[in-house]
Length: 125
Picture (cartoon, one colour):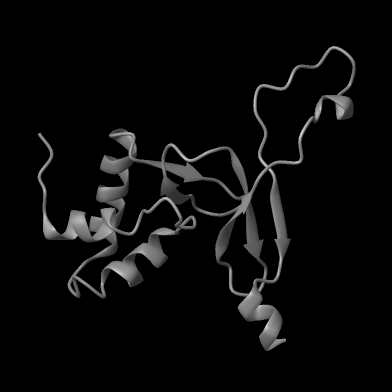
C-alpha cells in the first residue's frame, strides 16, 4: 500500500492536464514552495512510485535526464527552450509521416522535439 505523505502530495499536485514536462530539479524547486524540507532523493523516490502507478510518464530529450508529465494526455510533441532549458507541450502532430519512410518500413511510434526560445527568453534577447 502506498503511503500518502505531504511530500508525495506536494509533488503529485504539480502534475496537471495543462502542465508542462518537469525535470526532477524543477519539481524540487516547485514542491519546496509547499514543503521547504523536501529533498531531491524524495523527489526521485516519488517519481518512481508515480511512474510505477501509471500516474506520470517520462519525457525523454537526447542527452538529458528524463522529465515527467501526467499520464494519459492526448498525443502531442514538445518544445525545448535552448536558453532557459524549460520544456513545453507542442499540441498536435505533423500528421502522416509514412511518406518519409523507406519502402517497407512501418512506424511504431514517433517523437518530435522543436527547439528554439520560449516567449520569456525571446523577449529578453
